[in-house]
Length: 387
Image (cartoon, rainbow, N blue to C red; front, top):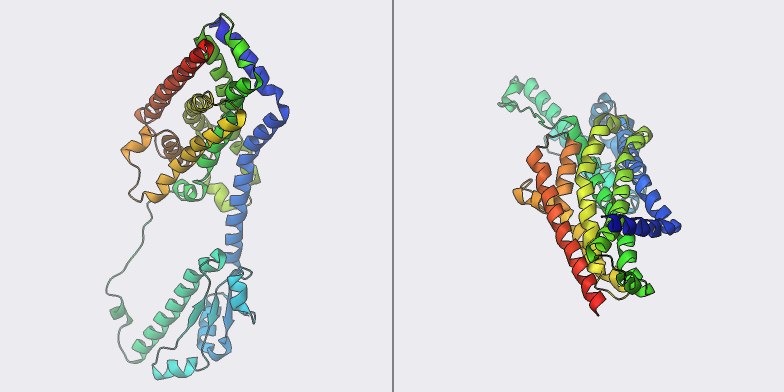
């Protein structure tokens, strides 16, 4: 262990010597929390601002005074749509759907003929598409009001139109609703840890082989296990440092939230940061060993970088399984590295309870994978020394 400690200090010193790369990695991990939360806050604040404005862009509203009266009673402000509203909707310059009314709206309504009303939007325009439901509900409310007035005029009880009363009940608490917006945070933290350990893992294996410093190191009488443990410890320390900085960056980042709604729903305190770390630190150790195991077989830094692209691709694609899986969380998710961490960190954001078996399962998988990768690196170094 004394020799492993010496190698660890040497490798850690080498990793910290490349200050430009280290500074970029550290700054990106520190900035990831504030940047993501500010972007989400700006998005939610923009949606709230458009909802509070209560504006409707319409074409031909002068042909429908009854509909104008209804919309104004709902405290909406009617504005004329631009002449080229279709082009602006397609180009995403107009952020609201457009209500188009026919010239014979009132005449058809008086004859009992349903007038054709268009709600024009573009599905690629997410801002305008978000207002389609609101505008459609307003038109349905106007239609229901007209139907009730006609029934009352003929002496029919309006309650006959609604034999069943429907009331929606949402079981999700505010934190679970907020997690729908912040579900991407665990993914970005995980990728920051992966990229943080990548450069150190490549440099301490393929980088030393390319520079010609690996063979002199293997000529020392130190056991191969001490060399590998020292190298792996240095790489894992860099990855763990990135994990610590990334998790704790969300604490001050909450001060930058512009949306009061998001600030009230997103509760990320010291407990959540520590739970994130308990999940990420074993994963950082495993990813460091895995990156080293892939890079130790390569002759150059670029070759190792290309080979580890497969590791980055697999780790980045595993969390996407939660998007395509509509049946909820499965038992095997906790046995899959990266996916288990994403699943449990999402639980933390939702405020759900996490049992000790749930924490021990990914920890055990990470420990086993780390031991196998470290043993493989030691075997490769032993073979390199013989050659």
